[in-house]
Image (cartoon, rainbow, N blue to C red):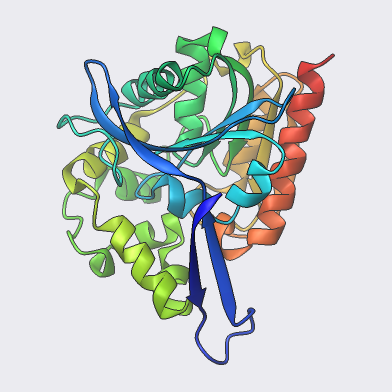
Length: 296
């Protein structure tokens, strides 16, 4: 691990006065016929699987996973990437979830990683599902966090996923639903100034046109016709106070997947940020469950 940052919290916070963000080493890589993207990686210990971490809409790999990197890297190989249009991800002017799944496999090819347990959070869930469907030989297991098989059946969801054409260019002007989606209310409101500035810097790298396209892609995603055929061990981390991807929608996905195991976090959609210890514990348990079933 490297690139440690010290981010003191504001006085009076009930949290510890200091928080250390420990990020794995990162670098830009060139993907043939795709362009340059940014990845972080940790080599797998002997005999351990590699985790592919796929972040959520409007976030980045670091914003989504910074609270878990250290714990995961102690036990597993880790590959974390920014999706196209997000952070330092690929830029080609278009966004399709299927392309994101193919991008992930191209990253694994570049890093010479053959198979992974794919771990998807929110939008990373559909990307994980599509990666299994399009490249089944690369996925030995799946962990789906705060996600669903479809996102756009209520009027509220239609407004969230298809009505974001006026997304502001500045992070502080993001519509409230999008702040909730990535936990930005916590990072921009309650966290210390160093952590806040770090989050704003992460968001400043986005291509907002592609993020709007990503929202529309999420609104159109529906795996209910084929997700029941998934044939790799799968666990779900369920956020039980989720205001974006409702808990019943997450549980419905779990019910469609053969022998799926569920692990609950009593937190909102941004539980990876707002409840880091609880989320990390549930994530590790979910991964362990998948790992155990791949060995049987």
